[in-house]
Image: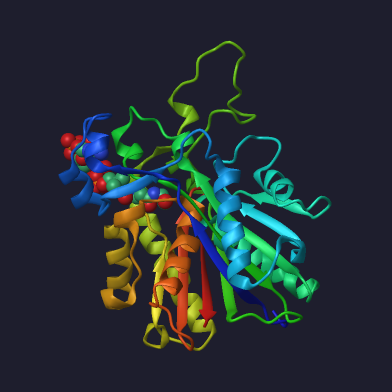
Length: 329
Ligand code: UT7
């Protein structure tokens, strides 16, 4: 990649309803103790009916624009990573484009589950190379609760809703964060371990027929856990190596926030102390494509990231897809 690419602004938004583990005890056969010890999650936010994916994305986008010192009219493209958009059609990116009043601006959704934001970032990096004056809004936005089976305790306690956004710019508009490098991977051969089959062309909805559990997230948690750790460790190591770096050179790692045990396992295998790993899974749960941009926005806004720092992002999700990116603040 020859042309430099930047992040000029970051923003996040969480829906207003906070849900505790005790709240979930009233819905499924679970306990605060099980959820805390097996996942590290204590609370998460659930979106109400007036907070669909596009609305969460809109709020995060407005904050990212403000953070970048831009207005919506400055944008050239919109990419949204999500598996829980408002509808199958229109796409969430088109709904967002309309909300921002940007008729004509190219907008598309990108489906890479929890890696969706990093897939958007790498796509934006390629666009910024083609169009050095590009100012691309990328958003990870999810209402995961719209695709959760609240009779399945093995999945419904893990996820939350939210959105995070970034403004990616090319060399025509250098920003405060340089995207040094990024890498994407996928493996469809094991995609069956984490699915939402219902509603697709191979699992069609039938008019008048009630829907079953296949319309919601179904997961073999133990196997996904193992793949998640191995893939995020491998891709992070490869990305660092091709940039002549080791984890000693990295000031903060922001991994996908799915489970504190996954995060701790990554830290152990990468030989990184816990104080160099950003964690918010305890407060926010797994927000899929929104996880990385929410954590990144929080980490910078709280002062955890300072100018001059190198930050490594890594994500893993359904598909399977996984990715890493290296940022220089
Ligand atoms: O975003 C990317 C994709 N997602 C992930 O990365 C998630 C990856 N997987 C995980 O985080 C973990 O595998 C889970 C948190 C999903 C599960 O943790 P685990 O330690 O692998 O538990 P398990 O699936 O082996 O289940 C242990 C026990 C089972 O009972 P038995 O069979 O031992 O009697 C489950 O039925 O825990 C039971 N269990 C629960 N108990 C209370 C499962 N879910 C719950 C629950 N509350 N919510």
